[in-house]
Image (cartoon, rainbow, N blue to C red):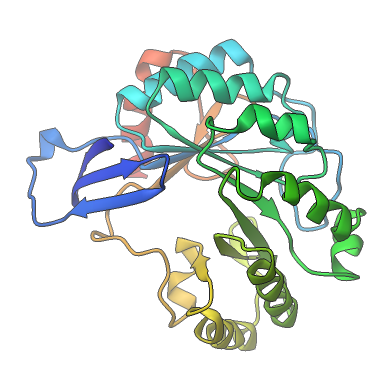
Amino acid sequence: MKLRKEISGLHYFDRKSGIHILMDEVTLNENEISNSPRIVSIALTNICDLKCHFCYAPKNKETLSFESLKKITKKLDEIGVLELTFGGGEPTLFPNFTELCDWIWNNTSLGISFTTHGHKMKKEFVEQLIGNVSMIRFSIDGVEPRYSEIRGKKLSDLLKKIEFVKGKIPFGINCVVSKNGIRELEKVIELAISISSENVLIIPEHLNGVFQLTENDWVELDKIIEKYDSEIELLVTHEAANFIKSKTLEISNPNEFLFSHISANNKLKINSYDKEGIEIDNINEIEKYFKQINKI
């Protein structure tokens, strides 16, 4: 297990099982606490072969280099980050993606998950990931005909890809919930249960950080979570906590540094939709950059 010293106490994380253990009865001195976030999301590339209408990722070909990622992830591990989440763009379009996961898994103690549309995942590709990632998250924002309208691909084709993963690598579903789209979420949850997904991460749609759901949508979202919470683990992004009554991902201290983001143009940001960011020009100064972000 990896240990992270934080405001909330001693945080132990096992990347293979996904188990988090927080000993919040332990009080640490300020100089002992990690300046880094628990999780860093990394946009490996902005390249994607789909054009989903709600996607806010930059539409260009910027891509991080394999060598820079080795240095960055090694440093993140050293300074107390627990997990990496790869995105994009489409992360499976990153050159030598499976080799990257293999290198990080065997040279750091970081957990690795990635979010994908899944249509590029062949059986051989999945086999190369076994033992080198903590979880795969598939983006499913609706069933048919909604899925095909958004992705331009058939949901049935994706479900065949997921069969390559079942029983070999833990997987979950990410569902972006659009305005007036709560009923579609219910269908996705039903699908997730039927294919034995570990959980469903509910992502309320936003535009430049502003949620697009109506007041009635939030009320209905609460009802859906209450209805299915005993059947499958339902997660809701932390930013949505103030809009719903249901439990979201819990933290022991509201000041805990949870997330940060590295974009495909090599900038460290507060989150993926931050327009600014800090250029990572010196790998040894990443912890100092985190201190700056943490104070914003």
